[in-house]
Length: 427
Ligand SMILES: Cc1cc2nc3c(=O)[nH]c(=O)nc-3n(C[C@H](O)[C@H](O)[C@H](O)COP(=O)(O)OP(=O)(O)OC[C@H]3O[C@@H](n4cnc5c(N)ncnc54)[C@H](O)[C@@H]3O)c2cc1C
Image (tube, rainbow, N blue to C red; front, side, top):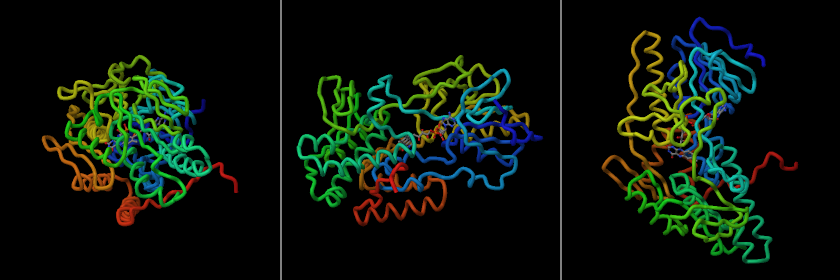
């Protein structure tokens, strides 16, 4: 395979960063314009803001407002190169990576590949359900939800209508809670006006969680409060039973219960991808790649792993950090600092995670926040959630668009993006 021909040899060492998610993007932003050549590789030419996928899936936001083109972020930055490519393998001996467009040598390699949906080896569930790990998948969910109601209008039988109108969300973590809440809000405020011929009393939104409670990593307060909110919004919650089977029409739980639904949204697990060439790297819980306190891949020279993909254990987090944005961002910030220190022959600083709290939104005026010893919910929590997410979005235009979208939806109780757009549509 050809080596990438148009990335020049630089007077500075080359750092190759694979993955432009929260971790990779933060690292690159901190490293460019210093004494390194930085090459960023991602399979997409944009950064995606995953915490708001669920709003794209439920017609609340346009896909374009939660993604940002990577080239625009690095216009006119010297000794920086972006390539849209898929990482295929790492050759540790030769210090090069193989990608879908060619090979590329590195002095330092940073992997920040995130994770993919975990179906726990159940290929039938994988093929029949929908997941939400990319903007394309979020858009697909939006299309399918809307198509379901278009189809339901033409079904004569009540049972068939119920099957197509029901939505089952699997996984009671923040993503599942947010998704179930947003669909319940659509059912309450939006769908009956769009489809007056349909009886939305027939539609049910289910949230299934194998553990005994929702929002596992959060406080008991948050868990109980979120469940209360969801029930008030009409969501049927089932905890303590895992999904065993789904044939595209009926879900079977481990306690034998069945639910009829054509639409299952899988938000139940995360899997870290294999990286050919690094098979010998030690893996920990959830197949995450074990790194030391400097995010160095254990047993390897000049290879670092960040974010969801990495398992970094410290006293307070013996099983690694939660797979959320903050650890990814904080690890990347410190790695950038350490690489700059390395260039000055200074010793690296060990990573310590600063937990800034966690939160989940459930619906209009309803969210839960854990902030150290403080736990609260309701309207204040919801506004804090809105503000933090708005500030975290990349791009001023995106922030402004999202702010106006949210303000409009809040005032009108409407989500205006209920359009089915497919690339294979006929003219
Ligand atoms: C639906 C959803 C909702 C979430 N909500 C929240 C939330 O509210 N709050 C929160 O803190 N966290 C949330 N998270 C988790 C958070 O998004 C992740 O923890 C965070 O994105 C991890 O950052 P990362 O940089 O490790 O990986 P990612 O952000 O996943 O980035 C990985 C990047 O690598 C690229 N990539 C992957 N494989 C390859 C390859 N082979 N070749 C080239 N490129 C590749 C991908 O395209 C992507 O750009 C949510 C996640 C999801 C899916």
